[in-house]
Image (cartoon, rainbow, N blue to C red; front, side):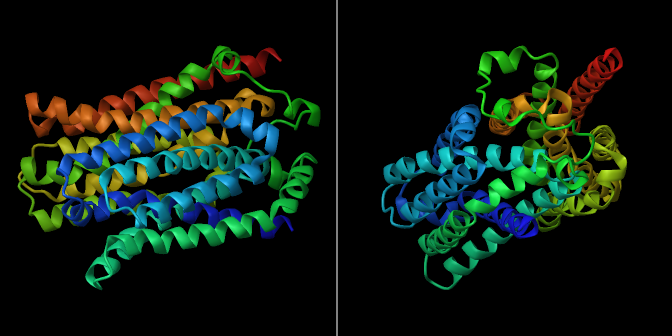
Length: 407
């Protein structure tokens, strides 16, 4: 039963990634059919991001009341309904309306699933699960390409993935009894459940106690990890959006080559998380975070080197993607160990909000900065975020170590 639920969660993470690339992949065709400016894509993504932030902040209260399984099933159901709604939309304003339940569902399921895995599964599964998210995010552009090239139109891609999400919703509803079984096994303190460095599970009554947002923010070290998570997601989103433009504008790389290596940045994250899963339990979350930021810094340095050859810049982009890979899963998985299992759902919800805030604000901020300075500043912008994330995470490590030593 425990393994069956894990398999369902893996499928859920693929499903989580499926819709994330659809707007970007389909927008050229969508924009033309809807008759709106190109920039209107930002309105849709901002509505989705706002919904994810709101539902992430509310996830602790909702999950404690209804359980991670029910929240996941309902949230995926909301996402399925929104995607099917997208497929029936013939006007831009209806897309904006359907973006609301899409964002609310995505944020809630992200926070609930991440906390459940952090509490009940080992570090390797957290890395592999996020690698499976990358698989889903990589598949959806191909689905959109197939739908458009076959003459079915962009709406067919949304309908296809919406139906997949609906089928997953049914599977999640049927699996609800398994979630309680896995939770009870996780509270037994097994190595598989506790994972890497997690403290023993507290009394079950404590898990039903609401941790208010204001209380969670006052826990020592929470603001540090929020800053680190913000920095990581900001550099990841900035790299994904602007890497190809930097290679073309500043390094003179051909557009096709730049596009290929920009996609390798995302594929590097996916492959890196898969590889990190094999060593995560031995290395530990702290070393994965520390090493990940350091490797991203090396990649940014290679991007910045003013050499005639472009090879090091291209290699630097791939290295940066590999460095990004373990940071997100390790931050999430370390949350129960750093702050206690009772507070983990509240803190992970806030972390998700910080993540979405960073990934939403940083790319346009860099775009504004680069208009004044030039695109050459990208490696230095990424390096500044690396330094911020590394400093904040190391300060948290010292704080946790001091607390553990005093205990």
